[in-house]
Image (cartoon, rainbow, N blue to C red; front, side, top):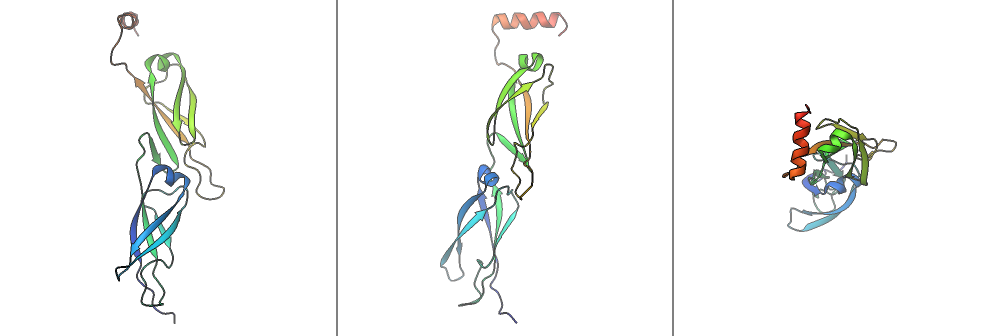
Length: 178
C-alpha cells in the first residue's frame, strides 16, 4: 500500500489576455506549512480561459519528510482586454464606422489578435451588424483544432459637431425622405 500523500494546494493564477491566448510560462510561489516557500515553474497552455484549473502533480504540501506531496491546482483568472472580448474561441471587437461608410459602403480597419485587418463594409449596413473573419480568433488549444473567428461589430460613429455645410447636406437628405 502506498504511503499517504500530502494535501493538495489551490491558488489563483492571474494572467494577461494575450498570455491566455498564446500560452505562457509563470513562476508560482507557494508557502509551505513550515513557513518556507517553494517556487514552481508552470507552463500555461495556449487557449486557457478564466475558471479553468491547471494541475501540477506532486507540487502541493508534503506529508512529512520524504513523503509524497499533494498536487498544486491553479485556478486561472484572465485579465480583461481594453478592446477585445473573448467568447470561447471567438473574439469580438467593436469598430466605429462613419455614417457615410455605413450608408454608401467602404472599408474599415480593426486591430485583431494577429494585427490589423481591413474589411469591406457593404452599402446600407445597419448599426450593430457583424462581420466575421474566419480563423482570426483564439487558436485551437489541441492539435488539429481550428482557430475561432474574429467578429467585428459595426457601430455608427456620430460626430459630436457638424460644420455648417455638413448640417445643410444632412438637412437636404432629410427633406428628400432619407
